[in-house]
Image (cartoon, rainbow, N blue to C red):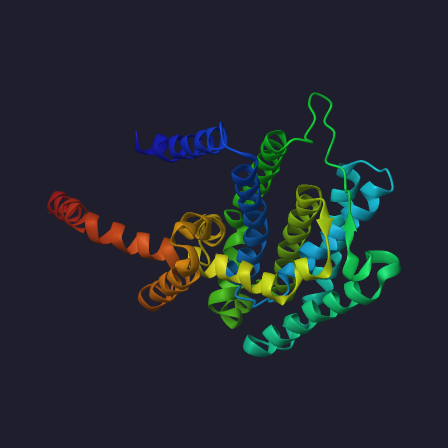
Length: 326
């Protein structure tokens, strides 16, 4: 029975995601869709930061690259799938190039490098108005046209985004549970030891940035048709910090951490709006308290509580196993 418990929980979660927007207004559906989109971007940053230990403050810039590429191609009349593939490919290559500084600098120095890249993207997007529209941005991006349905309305587009989210999550699950995933964790814990065991740390560092950046590009490819308007401010440094907050609050290095963190960052402020002018103060205080008492985020807190609650049962099983051996 235990081996069926996890698949059953996953199916239950999918059923909840399918039923959640039913009967809700357009704004609530938009918030749910935004959560799925930012969860994809946070999954990519979690691979770079949580699993590989490489600090990045540039995830919003990769979302921006993906959003602008998708917007320009779809406005030119090409299908969304073409724009999405171009966005993912471009952000993979740019992330690969950004990974090279990580081979020489670590810690807060690497954070400054990625911060500078995010600022560079913002300046280019703002000043090259012949391409990006400058401060006026781009608008009117069409939503994907599927063979069997239209996604112009918010509810069909939510289900379309949910499908992309499930595919992206399944791919990330395969990555982190493959030999690559174990190598990424070794790179995070002790790069010198990992290299002594034959792990190619140079290739892994570059792949961590490239794959994480490609997830940001995929999220940007969804943002473009979701809001149907993008400008440089949509991908400024504050958005990168927001995605970083999702990973840290949810639990860096946990598969479900980015999804939970995105839910807190995106959904909790909406839940607290009944407090009117106080909701941001309540939200900020809750995040500070969480970080003080659980630096490993909500997933780390849940894991710690679970081990504490199940300790007696595990101790009994250990005692029984010891007695059987005697």
